[in-house]
Image (cartoon, rainbow, N blue to C red; front, side, top):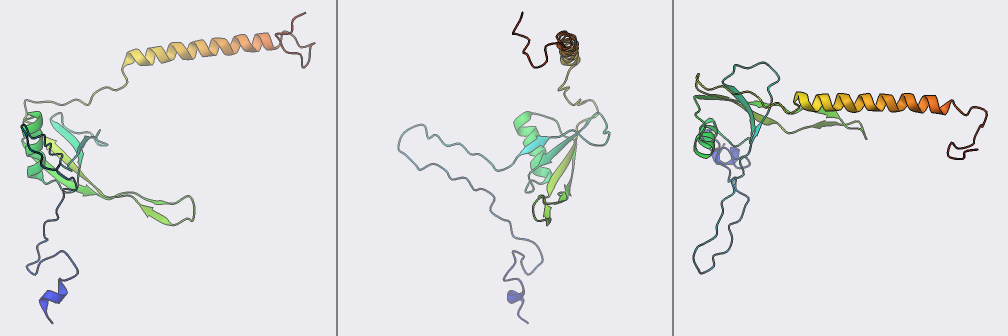
Length: 173
């Protein structure tokens, strides 16, 4: 059997390695005469800081990254753009959740995603930012207390005019 026919429908080469897929879907602007040329390169890479579900050491940060990024890409991205010293990068692909659809009952699978664990030097530490500080919690507690007081006032005023069934409270006598 001819080897070229075996690999003709896939993006694998006869030696078993995969061909690199062109990632960029963005178009450069047309060339126009003049100076300076306003060209901006926007890569299709993304990195999203996520809170780890399991406890991590103080110098480990977890990111969700695009599937095409390699460990080397992640390290260069953080070092060159954000000036973050990186000691080690560990990546793995997590499988997307499989759920049953609301209509029809068939299975729907979410896309897989890549997770990167970036180790910073031992002298560096990372603490996930506190998005809900204590001050806001205290404000919410005060608001809830006000709501409870208003409910009590409503209950006491509601029972005040029991002899006037169906008449609104604003219709005073």
